[in-house]
Length: 119
Image (cartoon, rainbow, N blue to C red; front, side, top):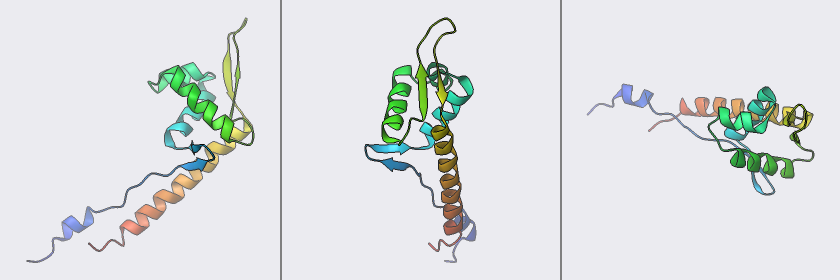
């Protein structure tokens, strides 16, 4: 029976990439999206809502990233006249940039290696 070339074309490598820290995952796709939403929304609660995530879970992720980073990625301010909020720090912006750069390299690697599959 002759090989089916069309089936060969559908095979591809898939994977996930994350950055490990001393306590496990430091940055992954979802955590980076959370950081971007915090940057854009100005608060952890609004960022969590936009991702349909509980505030508690979002805060735990932020605490984990802050604990594992050399300097905080997010700084939280408590309420008051203007209300509370959260600000992405310079370290947070660098973390986002670093992750997306590694993510793009990883996707390129998977695409390139997928073309070499001979199964």
